[in-house]
Length: 82
Image 1 (cartoon, rainbow, N blue to C red):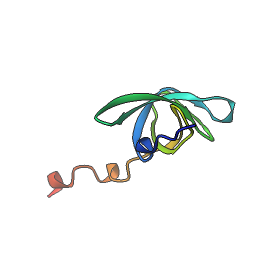
Image 2: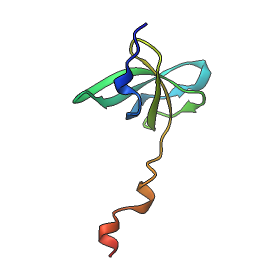
Image 3: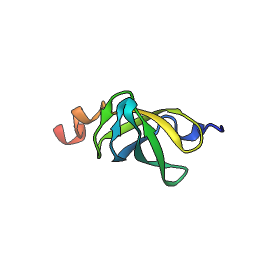
Image 4: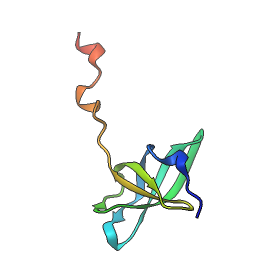
């Protein structure tokens, strides 16, 4: 199966939540100048609407994901704080 390396490292939102090892969900990812959907697998269940990071390509239109929290979001807009 061909791997889709371009999507690894991208973030996206789950359109359909994952069920961990019991089944996949669906993710919308901004990649290649547009948005594409992929079947998304995760080790733990993740809810619809969760922001996730693509960590692997599993072949044709399937990816492995983990929950993602933007590490800079906690700082907010620092320019307004000064």
